[in-house]
Image 1: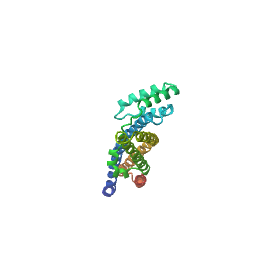
Image 2 (image 1 turned 90 degrees about the vertical axis):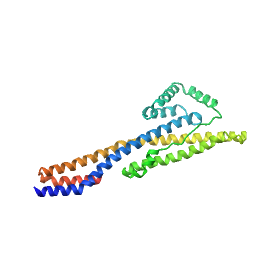
Image 3 (image 1 turned 60 degrees about the vertical axis):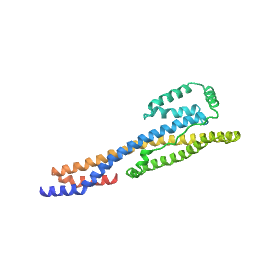
Image 4 (image 1 turned 45 degrees about the vertical axis):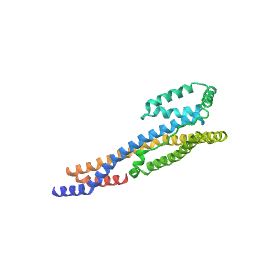
Length: 258
């Protein structure tokens, strides 16, 4: 019996730190993943919201666009959940009209606001960027998606900065009227290009949300492996020596494969 306790102590001393570290990392990854997911949800909402504003001003704002954008607002449950209700109500009201009527509404609104530019702000991911060094905790698939999101957002912010520069130029009294018209036309083109980027990136966000379930399945597998390993130790104490070696061997291999 003393030999059993010696072996048990040796196994705990050998495997204990690794097991504790894996459990700690699992909780860290889960908390980190939840924070990133929440921030990306807010980012996606901002992108789709901007796409609507840009579309009404100069880009695409037809039935197809409204039907595409509506589910994003309906599924959003973040900090702007109250303000989204007005947007949903507006979109549904517009969709009640015939295509010709909808086109006239958009055209009339653009004529009314002609000469005015939008006040835009760059979109940031402070939580994600502060945890950039910890992304190695995640699987490669998830890391690729996160870095793709960061890259897309960087390009979008460059376009927003450019649009902001043109926005301020429209207030420059030193510029001639003819050049003001040129600037406004250039600004409309930038709005249309920016809207396309926002729509493409918003769709990228939406389609890659499916990784959430796969990633949480990894957590379940890890905790199952820990349970399986500790069950082997319990079997050892109960002197079920016949299944000991095989159970421990399988457990360690399972952990290493995660």
